[in-house]
Amino acid sequence: MATQQQIYDWLSTVTDPEVPVLTILDLGIVRNVQVSDDNTAIITITPTYSGCPAMDVIAMQIRIALLSKGVKKVNIENQLSPAWTTDWMSEEGKQKLKEYGIAPPYRKSSNPLGLFEDDNVPCPRCGSLNTGLSAQFAATSCKSLYKCNSCKEPFEHFKCH
Image 1 (cartoon, rainbow, N blue to C red):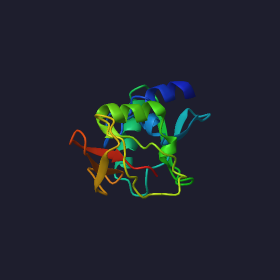
Image 2 (tube, rainbow, N blue to C red):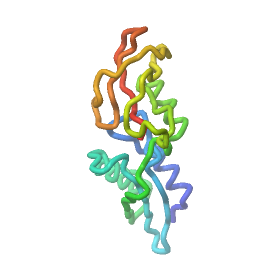
Image 3 (cartoon, rainbow, N blue to C red):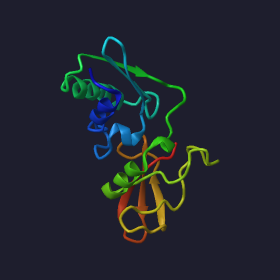
């Protein structure tokens, strides 16, 4: 029988298919892990946004990770409320984003700007605040595209929401 801590340890190897430098624990989408009396691992996850195409892949990766460790029964539950927020991302995950070249969310989702983008998102390459929004959407819907006016490099920003 696997323990809750073992399952969390195994989940720490499951990465986000859209931003592979982040684990699902870095993202904060794992809301709960339980082991039932019949040895079923119950993993509760919250999608980063409704309709996120990566959630099916993440659920499959969770199943593979746990089955490969001998867990026979895996139940994955989706929890939609409360809605996921970038506030749930770990500080380590935000640092990984920055090192990967993606500007992490840097303000709390409760900020009155809501889903609107910020001016002067810090460049993850040179740290300059002299940046500007180029496009509301980048490679994925959860990111926007910016350009640094100092080092002239484009970069993605993980939107705060």
